[in-house]
Image (cartoon, rainbow, N blue to C red; front, side, top):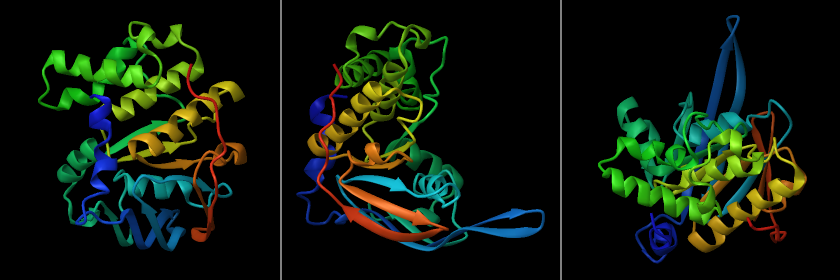
Length: 255
């Protein structure tokens, strides 16, 4: 995966046939069943995310943030409404097709890093590519490019225990990038990091949006983290309470 390959999304903006919004959420409803009763988590939610935008998703605990993230990423299905990603209606995909779509289209970043402790940084980044037809050499090349992009080319042979928390999260970002996804979904990616490491991760996410056209949706409770995004989506009790457009606050790049 080269820097040129990562510009796929930015280049697609010039295609008049490409949808203006990469993600469209239309009337989505999600209800969980507990003790025989229905708990409404999302209640007729509508949302559009433009291609290449960096969105922070905020709201109190229980407002539906992670549920929405999982629905957009195809990890869960709504009880009503529809979600479109790059013009594809997710409800029309079987479970097997949805898994293949997810592997090709979405990169996930989690608060807990989710790295395999027995593998090196490069091997962790290569994991999503094991399901592709790439050769071993090609997988290694793609992983090296991804690690270089996040500033960790010199840590390729280190295992997670040999890395700082911030470095582990940047490895996780490289893993999310290695398959060149259209969409990056991040759930509290700075929640376990100190301020300096958090700023480095936010700077990297901002760069991926601005320079490489990646569309990013980041769940966060941290107002300072949200300042790195171009748009802040506010949820409360399963409903959209507004979208705030703002200038991005400069944050520290990986070094």
